[in-house]
Length: 475
Ligand SMILES: [Zn+2]
Image (cartoon, rainbow, N blue to C red):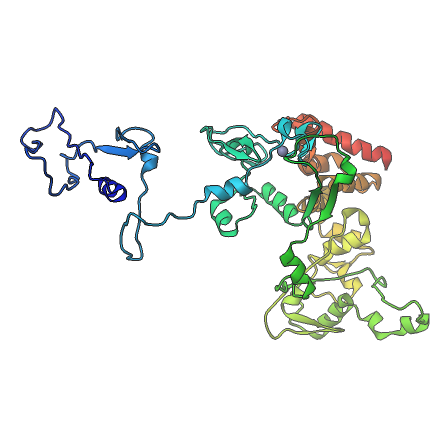
């Protein structure tokens, strides 16, 4: 540093002071007796290496000595690494691009609240995203498994649109992604299945939308505005996406190896025909008798190899070829059933059976359990033990809860109640109330403007039952 000062300022008048300290061995630390210095070598790191003499240059250009233990000293150290065998340190070594800029540019919420009531996040005088958040010493999880990120109260403030914003306004993000892509990327750490459901819904929320805002005047200063004419809720398409679609490029490249295994009740297969087609021709068309499902039963008569497979497992070894199944030569794919709500009767029981039955060659075969022929799919389900204790409804609701909103699960529960399909509704409720009430706390938090409200199980159940009662009364 002293050397650079000498270079920079072309100033011969530099003092180099050598410190004489008491308490040191006078034989080692003798001050020189002449005013010339040849070389100074910073001491070896042995026990004799005592305090370092640290002199920093202030912005004013004055030099100041600080103690090695001074709290601001450590942040002033910048370890430099030269992993690619470059020349080492030079005084004009370029600075790396700073990352702080991106996070202040993209990842600070607001300004909103009292300083800008017109912000799009504001409703009824409050920020709907609950900013500013609280300072938090350590990252932890709330009762629902959602992360509450650390927000250090370290006094750091930046100006956003002229408004001071601190750590309480920072949107969770990842510095690496921010540097790489230079845009708003909200990153949250989720390792809980419930947060993954949130994520799943998030990425399927549809196209980006933007609320655009036309304004005359400056700086978002509040004035009387006609909100309807000023805000336009628009679908947002970036220039890249627009070009991509204009050129008709593929939106994604993956063909999933999952096939939809369609099935239907006897004589209820889908028939596609033109309005003008004569009925007779439609009915006599060969394809009417060749649904994928019927062809599966035909294939079971023909091929031994598929008889140990259920209908959804069938595509592993067979390929659907327009109107018949043939042995698969390469790769494999899995079948999946479409969802059938538990309240929908025979279709539901047929689906239950198809998950279990292997190698069926007719509808009668599907209804045959342990050599006994049953009259209905439902009876066959009972004989297989699939229908005890309303278990299939509990499974049905649990399955639906993986992707359906709590509201639609309540609708399902209500339709089961109204159709009197449930033998023990209380048992179904006890097993499934968490799914039926999943949105209750969130709703209450919104209604009461209380972002961290905690409710007991009893309260949640009561509020959920109220919602169900509303549906029953209306339904
Ligand atoms: Zn806000």
